Amino acid sequence: MHTSLTRRRRSRSARMRALGWLAVATSLALALIAPSATVLATGPGDNGLDPTGNGTKSNATVGASLSAAAGSATMGTAIMECSDASVGSVSGSFTLAKTLDVGSKIVIYLAANAGSDASPAGNVSKNETTVTLTPTNNTSGSIVPWSITITSAFTTTSGGVLGVFAVNADGVTAISSSKTNSLNCTEAQPTATPTATPTATPTATPTAAPTEAPTAAPTEAPTAAPTEAPTAAPTEAPSGGILGETGTPRVTLPPTSTIDGGSTPNTDSWRLMLVGFAALMAGMLVLTPGDRKVRNRC
Image (cartoon, rainbow, N blue to C red; front, side, top):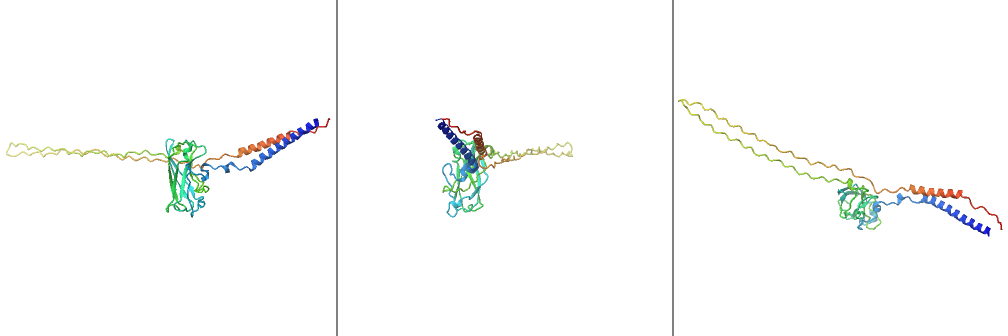
């Protein structure tokens, strides 16, 4: 009976050691072949494969083909206008990389960057605009402006908000995965305070002082005494001036951030953890002695 019990224990120990080595091999395999999180991360707007927060999609075609419009535009730099921390509008432009059909509609909307403090966060992607291409701006190389007026209010001071393209009408074609620079109200374009146009101070028209008429002196002798020529009173020169116009101060725009989409986590840490776990398990299995054979005493 003692031998039977020992054999069962040995068998169970062998199974546990086999499972331990299997765990070591699995950990190493995951660390080597698992895809990087950088590849899996999609960033704001799902690389152009999402509709807006209202469900709106683009509807751009090349030769009436939705899929042919893939990669047909590149997003440019945008600016944000704010009142304190409240966003008022966002505007920018994109450049066509292909000639699209006239009447194609390209939808642009806002998406919160990774780590953004936008609040309420759900309102950000509801702000959108649709640009309809015309014969004057549908060809490759055309720079097309766009502007989004904020209708679903939100605030943001850090983390950033991006302008992105909405997915095409087929739901699988990306107009472009490119995005605007990251925007915050702390980096928004300042609004210059208008200055009143100065009004020149009117000056009164000078009036010449009247001159007194000379009075002839009486004569005592038969010969008339010469009379003194009257002298006209000097007139006062007009005074006063016109004030110079005050120039309107120029407003210098601060530089806008050109940070791209949200940063993605580094995957090296968890890969190292898997390798470390495998090494630890292997060490324990090597250092733990197996069951020694027990002689049959019965």
